[in-house]
Length: 271
Ligand code: SF4
Image (cartoon, rainbow, N blue to C red; front, top):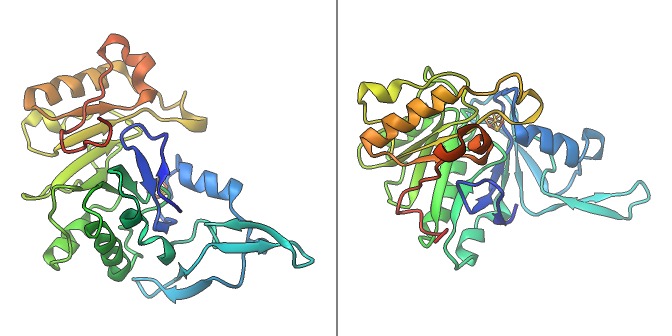
């Protein structure tokens, strides 16, 4: 749950004050990882975790006050875990001061192991994460959700910070997915995995300050491989509209000499 150096190429670090998600994406890396390396339900610890009702008042979500300890049947220490309830939505409250403690600037992908803006997440959790970010303005924060309408709801409730170092991303594997774009906010679109042509830009719409695109990875990478012409079209329209385009490493082989990784000047941590 610490702020970790990341292999994800469009950020430098990840930080997961909230983990877990109830979307059911077939390609979910986070769920696969936690299912494999997190504790199994019969190992879930009783301490360090409190269950509360979710924002829909329908199911339980969890608050964790410290890293949970897993014990052997004889009570001896086995290991600690950051996923005391597996992939169920969990706030790791003890991690909220981590950005403040890290003084060196980083481009941080917030909640890479879940969705902070799922409809089940209470506003209070999101506000606590925003407060933690505001206390550490040396970093750039990249939020990403499959539920970008939540950004709009937070905005109209006066709860969405408008800061140049806070970027609100929408996941849009296809162009039919909703995206968040509102004046005064830094926004980006993550087209990953790209599953078809993305022509929304061609209409000249102002839709983002940054576009990230990547291929399907994992077990269905071959079946869902992108076509070169989809990426080429995206690149050409981004160039015309002066939108930085960041191609993930998963596209390097496909794109050859047309492979580019652009990012906005505000994301300085890589320099
Ligand atoms: S939205 Fe993200 S975290 Fe949630 S299931 Fe889909 S890929 Fe996984």
